[in-house]
Length: 257
Ligand code: ADE
Figure 1 (cartoon, rainbow, N blue to C red):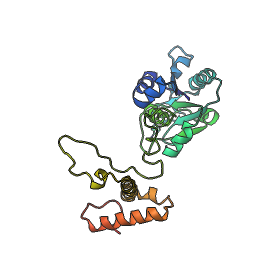
Figure 2 (cartoon, rainbow, N blue to C red):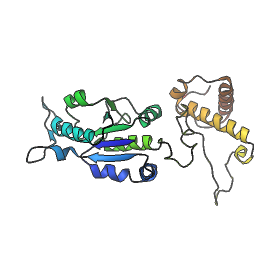
Figure 3 (cartoon, rainbow, N blue to C red):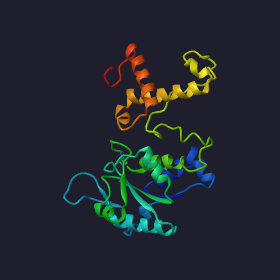
Figure 4 (cartoon, rainbow, N blue to C red):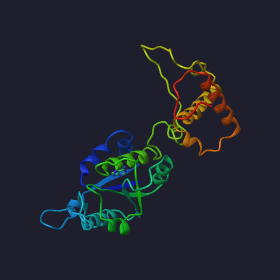
């Protein structure tokens, strides 16, 4: 997979794609990331990439011409057709499902805005979709692009060392992840659910599934509402809920059943 990023801060994108899983995916030849600076395609003496908005108001708007020329150069660098995504709070929010969809693309071009955003005509003419990483405003699209690159990069076949770890992630089945424990010099096994030390793999699987269901119910009930649970899951969740109702644990956002 190839990802091109249009950004006024190419070094930022280069640096954050050198580390961690994405860096490894790059080293393993599974994906490449190229950064392109629209300023290199500005034609005036000041290499301007922005101007005041028509109609007045605060902030600056990115000029369409340097962005368009930069995009053309990025497109021309590879014959593979690219999906052009503009990172913006106006787009639908990135989800794990969306990350999977994008991870299957041969080529993406991510456009990072700065200032008040980019001229809408550039979006109308060149952008296939807008994508947000959440309902808050960043000062530019670079961090959002880095998030997309990470979420998509770790899904490339061979990027993760343990073949199973992507499929067991939070959200892969619409649920939050279960809690995890490991050896601790200072804590020993105190506070570790005994089932995890039992060696009973079926019981461990059941417990993990129940924790995923229960945590999703407690913390993100709107996710649970989108799923059709089978009878086994409903039973696990009901047991979790009645145990929780009897406990003194602090209340979640939902009312005790
Ligand atoms: N640019 C600024 N804020 C953003 C957000 N929330 N998501 C994606 N791109 C952005």
